[in-house]
Length: 95
Image (tube, helix red, strand yellow):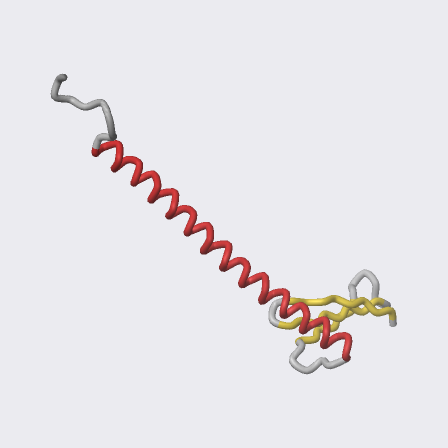
């Protein structure tokens, strides 16, 4: 038997494998962090949409920003925009 062994991995192979695994986990954690942040933003947007919808259905305009304007090309049509925390609803009325 000669003095070399054919079994096992060299130190370089183990280090390279650990580096690949650490890069993969870093990418996975970054992906999960972004997904969590986007989920939170989506939930906040949906909650604001529900508040705006409820307020409009109940006729409660407190806390809503309301803008009204006549359309230049159609003077008989009035555009009313209701907005709440970045969410808006546009309603058209015929005068």
